[in-house]
Image (cartoon, rainbow over all chains, first blue to last red):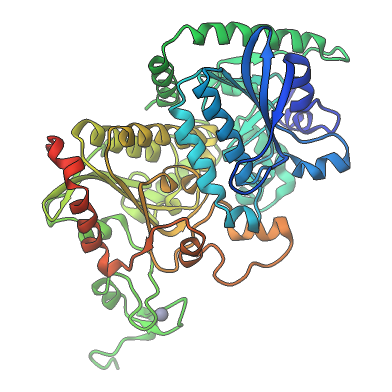
Length: 259
Length: 273
Ligand SMILES: [Zn+2]
């Protein structure tokens, strides 16, 4: 598939969402709400679940399926309170030694008046700083769209994976095309330039793994792979000391695109 | 005929705020501040070093870091060359160490004349190294943020600079060191969403545009025009995202006093420069 076909696939209306995957990969997901400061952002879901028999903290960016759900979820574009809710759950995970697993699917953090008034930039920045110091394993999986800072705010992890048809980019292809050629309809060309496919990012050393999606109707193969890979990763990183985990995560980002 | 001391129209600069005609040399003397309305014009990184550091104390670091077109992005090589010519810098950050009132610190300043301070791999690396050096030496870091955001032409690698710099800020902070960031016009995008908003003390220049999304993007998203003063420094102070607004004229003294306050915590631990 060409880069732009991946963009289309990652955004497809009938694609599985974070909650779909959470429901099948984990057991007994209990959702927790609110950032304890302002509100409960429905673009981000967070809670506790079992990965096989291990309790884990699960955080997902949820886009919703139909029009009604999508607007309730703000199309998966979080406000500052969403990132703060996620961070609250991550700090609890650290306290109780639970590994953290994030499913990322967003076109980006929301751009609006309320989001700016409540410090969208500050909320993302705080997640980047605090995640870099989390003394518990963190695995992030880009399951659809990985849109810029809004995706990175849940992706300062020990390993970052992408599903086969997911994309991860600093800017949307449309945004890039309109800056570059003053023409947002040239998104196809921009998609190629941005190197946003899972294969590109594996080559660039930005992700550790590509999870094949398969083509079966219920995504059974994908769920199986995801479950097994996550279990292996949790086992691997749980063997590290709390300080080693932090050092490992620091070096991971320190070495990307090394000069 | 030109009358001495009278400025020909072609050489004057109109203040974007009060529209008065100003002479460029007068602006240099006045720290690029309009004498009529105090509008803060953009200021180059080198001018800022003159403005805040003890004379001759600045020692620049990482001057060998050169940006490259890592993704083979169309037109980027040309853009880099033009930016280098326009700014006289290799990339958008000037960094190193200096003293203010003899107190040592790490310093990074973003350059408006280099692609409006956009953050790519070199900028992120220079800022990260500034924090790493300061952590080793137990000295504070002072930063001047100015950026249109992440550098699109470096794709995902520019996004990764946000995580990299944030990790370095965290280590510096965990070791008990002070970090002060001054937000200047404009501070937006990935820079706001990383090290600019991560300082212990966040200051802003009067009237500076500070936000995550740029005003045009927000207007397109919400299909409404934004109220006057939206995302300006005064708005950020009102909403609790900066500690203070400090006019350029007072910055050196203000920063010195902050360094003094934190002296015991930092320098007396055995700092050396
Ligand atoms: Zn003026």
